[in-house]
Structures are given as structure tokens and as C-alpha cells.
Image (cartoon, rainbow, N blue to C red):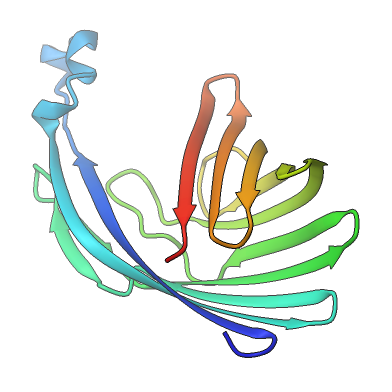
Length: 187
């Protein structure tokens, strides 16, 4: 960290599961569709993200280079998946009532099989709730894919600059629900 500029390195462990399957109509059984272990390959690997953040008064600009350790993987039927380094660009505005932010995938996330490559624009607002707790509301707009746009809500607890946890829920449609839990401890 130097003045209004921050540099961050994130080491991470990734679990990648490639599901690939051809179902002949003669032998189609609905119960077979959900036997994921039989028709998938699992991979574990380390990876690395590099981020840069610069703040000018109330405005901030971020640039993230993700998945810097590129790899090529193959599904159970030989389908090729290439994990490439990606670039995200972010802009935020900070005030006493909270934060407004926008993040855009400059490079699309890779596709695999029937899943095409996709690019997202994420819009969020964060606002204080009580003491160390804050809330988040946002939207995820999807470009270059057949997925629906999504809305999200999150609760975050932060203790100084060294520790935070976050619980998030996402809804894209009646059949597309998701969530995540994050814990961050800065050393």
C-alpha cells in the first residue's frame, strides 16, 4: 500500500469439475442425467490473482488480473476447457451513506461444452446497518450467454481491516438460486 494506491495478491485453491455427456434417445432415463460423478472429471489446482486499486477522493478505480496460472483441461468425452487469465475493471464511489460500485469483465469467462463464454456487469450498493455490519444490494447483468440476469443481497461483518465475513444470496429466476459464504483474514 502506498498512499491512495493498493496492490493485492490472492493465492487460491480451485476445484474444477467438468461435466460432459451424450445421452442417446434410445437409452434415455431421467435418473441417469443426475449421476454427475460418472460423467465428470474433477481437477484441483492452485491459482493466483493480482489486483490494483487507486483512489482519488470519493472515486476509486480497480483492475484485477485473475487466474494468472492458465491451464488446459479435458472433460470425460474429450471436450477442451481452457482456463485463461481474465481481467476485471471496477469503479466505485464512496460517501458517508455507503458505496456504489460497478465491475465489468473486460475478458469473458471461458465456456465449456454447451455453456458459452460469458461476460458480466455487476452493479452494487453497500450501506451500513449496525456497528460492524453492512448490507449489500446488487444486480448482475449477463452478456454473451443464455443465463438470466440476477439480483443479490448480502450481509457483511467487518472487524477493522484484518477480518471480514460475508453471506450472499442470489436469485436469477424461480429455478436459479445461489449463494456464497466468504471469510477473509489479512495477514
